[in-house]
Amino acid sequence: MPSPASERSPRGAEHYDGSAERLIEKSRVEEMILSTFDQRIDTSGRVKPVTVKRRLVYDAVTKQASTLGAPLKSREIDGFLLPEPSHRRTVTDRAGNMIDERISKFNTNSHLYRALTDPHDMLLSHSDIYRLNQDTEELSALASAYGYSARTSSEQREDAIHLKRTVQPSTPQLSPGVRMYIEGGGINAPKIVSTLIANGARPSHAKIWIPDRSTDWQRFRTDTPILEFDATADLEQAVELLRTLQDRLPLPATAGRHLVGLAIEGVPFAYIGQSDHAGGSFNQSMADLFSDAIEQACKSMPLQTGDTVTREWLGEVSDRAIGIATELSSDDGRDRRCHALKAGPSADQILRIARGR
Image (cartoon, rainbow, N blue to C red):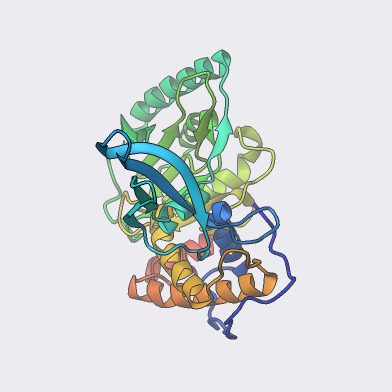
């Protein structure tokens, strides 16, 4: 991913002061923008041309027509950092061949979601797969002993283990969708959940993404495991367990990047986020919110092929995106103090727990 240069200011930029209330840190939004458009920016920090895919749908020599068409060499044209909506046209060259030309839609939401889940390359050995199987079996047995039902599903091309507490708190206390994400990653996630439950953690639900049990290279997400809570005391207990059990959990040596979520004091490898509803994806709700804001901000300060992504442009667009996201989040019922939480009494409790006060 290129670093923004500072050779010149983008064309047509207007000063924007941003929102006085910061929904999210500006540095995180700047990284969201760079991560979202990493395929549209070259290593020198300049906007790349737009690729036009081409297919031969009518051959003037053979007189053969094809709906799908044989692939031809792509061509490049000048375009915006955020390409125009996808379009398709058929052109006829001088020889009479008919060629289908198409620019694929740039899906800001899916590119941002990929950045939020931060997939990485993973290669499992046979011993890794054996340990993953053992830890998964241990988790299922332990969950049953502590009052959880377990099931496995296949989602987004990956398997996930779901745990559900069979006896829920009589009074939920927290508003729905409060989740804690632990940066266990890959084969360590089942062991992390087993250790927490064995030491007293009581999430209402848990979701543990599982990598393919294969020795081939694979791309795997880092947002696993995920624990969901209905009761304030259960969330607080789990956070305290993370603070005290760090040395006993198979956690990465260094914490990764968390582009969204409420940071937990003293626990750099975990964060809290509230989805739009119980069982919903917090990262997807954040992709929905910030992709809209980033698109609007980028359209208000458009860069074209050859333009440089400067520090000034990135900072200004980030300010605008935060202002837009703040308004959108208010309409969506989010707390203006923190993008990760819904407004309401639960927000104060969650902020207190995360800050260790």
